Image (cartoon, rainbow over all chains, first blue to last red):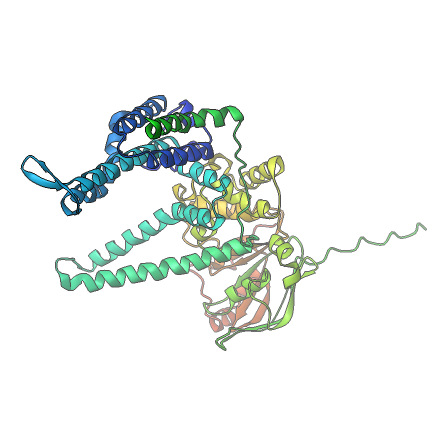
Length: 253
Length: 260
């Protein structure tokens, strides 16, 4: 799987983090996020330590910080929501440069911002160091319901096919002089969306027919066995173990 | 005089269809008693106009549709719910759109899908995949995702996906559709080299003539002609009656048909 499937998040490199099996990394990120979420929001220093841990992982994975920060932008809509909280939440108010803000709202906003950012950063590192295909195999290995893994794998396979179909339909519309210049044209766009849905649905039926013809009976065969050595598990566990220490300190100090 | 050794029992035909009739649940009857026998190793073209029932017939061959009347036997095994897994291994259908046929993330996994479903694992599976890809000359592309291949390459991989199941009969639905002349010729070369029974559903009459010594014509749900491809194509009345038309300027009588 050296070529292709280079989704936009993935950074091709050779690093100890890239080399870890996907299911170890998935488990590590999941445990890390759980630990971050269960840390009391008042221990602000703990979140700084978490960020330092992630920075160390990113360094080991040869993910440039610039890349990481750019990918973090996906979080912006949630940040906007968090920034509203001090204005809408109730409770005792504090004055910050002449504006009265809710104290519980401020804590809530901090809580969402800090934990959300750490979670997104961990996921970005995971996505930058793991190919989509491996992620799917990892999820399969972690016993995610096979139906979900199959759906995700078909999304990867047919995303481009459907985008292509959409592009052809757009060109066909444009070729017949269509311009989406006002609300009145929305009907046409809605019809295109409907037609695309029907086409995709029919394709789904044909794909199913092809699968059944090759012996499919509801479960995907395991073609690539993925396994991890104890050393690899220990490597992946470094991040959640360090986070566990931080989390415990956060509760006791 | 030496005792005459009895000839070895001839293998059962790869495909035997007798009296097959089928009506869709909405009442539309598509097949009215189809009889067709394809001996082992033969390449047969199934010709017929749109709506003649070709696809319906193909879907009966591996038990996706079940016969209303009559029977289908594949290499001696009747198509029935009891044997459906074995039947689907024996009948390899290559559908028209390779994007429907190739549904796995990489070529290698797609070719492995059939044999892996049948329970093959490890080195045996890997060698089966490699052999199938080598037969269509695509072994160098094993780790690529199907949508990065050209249309002709995808069609060849689609053929490999069923070859990997070591079928008794290869059923090709419009194998030459949407191929440029070079890909078309490459596919013909590959098909000619395969040692397997082929049933080829097609509108592409020159392609049928090039690849299949024998043809059958399906029209309105019955087989109306069965014989040498060259003779059928030269029979102008038969051709006109069943909406079969040759490309402009093509004279089927003038070409020498390559042997098997």
